[in-house]
Image 1: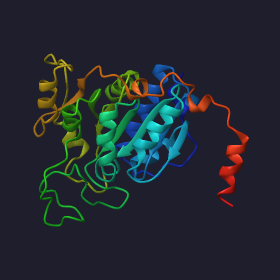
Image 2: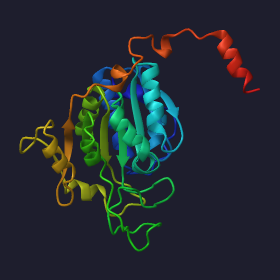
Image 3: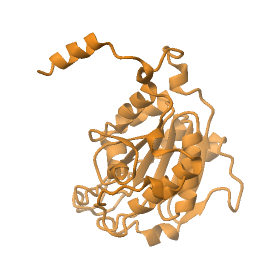
Length: 285
């Protein structure tokens, strides 16, 4: 398959220079190199600039409520295990409104991939502080600067022994595509926290700022992603140097295999009972 086969005709409403464009290209490249067809994928997203991404590629899509992406994605995977399910959202969508579901998803370890576009700001609502905004950052909602420490999702995921934890950068499409491929192939919950610039509302963490700081794990020195202590240390490394790559990987049994109903016919393959459908539709009259 070619990445172009995932192109959509919908007009793109992102700002010129937005990091979402690089993430979109990385997603298309990853799916095409894995040989996954559009009809084999199901994207689930919430509300925000990042959750618009599934609208701009050809795929199955469920666009739901703000912060409620993960339970829907897990439900889709349980109903149809043959689907490649990818949850998509931003740092606000996933780490603020959706933080409770994020914690539950880490524990459940369902076989889905979670791509978080982390631009450290609320973009859709025009520049308020997000959970990952750095201390001191001046935004429309914090004119005197952020007074709380930034939320570190990769570190939290490692602390809860998530199956797969990676950090990527929207400005390095080939590297990010490789991380997304590994996340999709991983049997269990896979988090890819993606650093990206917001050209309109985050004037601190720009593309140039990231390029001067990010470095690839394992390139100049060895990194063992099964070393949980070392992975936690790397996840908390931030400032002059920021590591990108696979931070942590563990071999926990996925939720959809361990669940009590394993072995029964998936919901997607069951014939619906007409009487049940009739009773259901009557409730909406």
